[in-house]
Image (cartoon, rainbow, N blue to C red; front, top):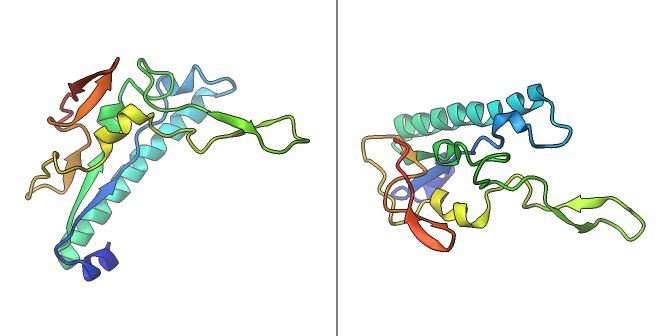
Length: 157
């Protein structure tokens, strides 16, 4: 963040966090053990703490205009095994090689599904508080599509 701040001192830096990937510790994922699901979800929490700390450090050490955008609340209940499921599970893209019978997972695997992505991207519609170093990924004013109809996201703050 220091390099960004040094090159663009007036830029607002938004550090985007990660959602928890699994609901019910991945009970719907074939072969996923409960302990593995818990560990995988804990990674999002650890990353959020570290990323928020990096934003706080950047703001205090060199007056960066940085915020942390936390998508975990927006995806609560909607991760893999959720309803509606807003995060891709394993997406198969086809064969890795002509002589290989195993399909190759797509890079879409474990990423938000397209209708959910705009809700978690910083946009001019989202207003970050000048006094807070944390931003909610689901602030009011941002739209999501539900069965083809744009609807406001619920606030998670």
